[in-house]
Image (tube, rainbow, N blue to C red; front, side):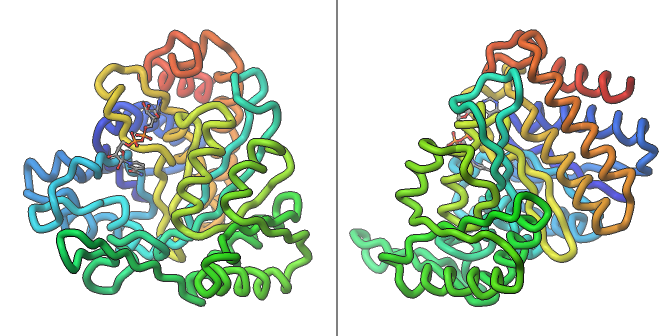
Length: 352
Ligand code: NAD
């Protein structure tokens, strides 16, 4: 099975290296038969190939079984005409990765802002407000005059139906509770369509379904963090809500995710490239490592390979034990370990 590794920008090379150490240990321990290869993306490929998202990298992604992608410092990229494509959005569009799955869980013994939380945010990933990926051609954002900017938000029935199905399937395997989040009181057509589709899909499942407006939801998830389980929402709301959930459960360094479609899956931490701490060996690689575990789970499910799912569970358990020990944490969680030492400690526990 081929796994393509792309380091990304900022803390990307550090957290991806730590995750790779863990992936290699899991590969050996569980006999997974994974072959790891690398390709360039982001600022690295901008320098060497004049683009942050080379066609050759996209071709390699399409040939791979799974992809590990570090965060990208898209805010400092030059305009697309000068090679600065958002490779994160580009990957989601090129591989049709419509479901961004972002879990946030409070880990026993690990500091968090709330006592109990175990939610999974299922975020639509290919349309909504995201101007660089919500159009077939061109961008969903433009300036008719220097003093006027217009953004277009796209919500389709197909997009809503497939994300609703992904969320219902997930809810079925958990507590059976599904919360849909939107702003249908104001965005009556676009979010109205989203709510209509989620209700239609959910009616085929035996689920306990409720719904909240996104503004109220940001308050409720702080007030009653243990009330929610699977949350399904559109692209921008999901992006914002998942950072809030990750922070409540301990910090952005703990929030993993996969971007999944029918044929491809990309492991990518929910957080960004954290340029403020890049190069200091202090970033928390937990989110990146857990994203790889989620990728293993997806691959195991898709290819009927239970050993991949077993490896995913074991990585999660080892991370939980590692985070429970104050001396086993990175500085963002009050611990002494560097990014590399954290990866090495997790890999060692996994091998043992
Ligand atoms: P960010 O998520 O990079 O950082 C926000 C804060 O969280 C910072 O204080 C940072 O130090 C901290 N943080 C993030 N990850 C951490 C980790 N693993 N360990 C410890 N602390 C961590 O958000 P930002 O600063 O708004 O964005 C920085 C860049 O990342 C921007 O260019 C943005 O466009 C990009 N971005 C990329 C992605 C992606 O590639 N998926 C996602 C979000 C933002």
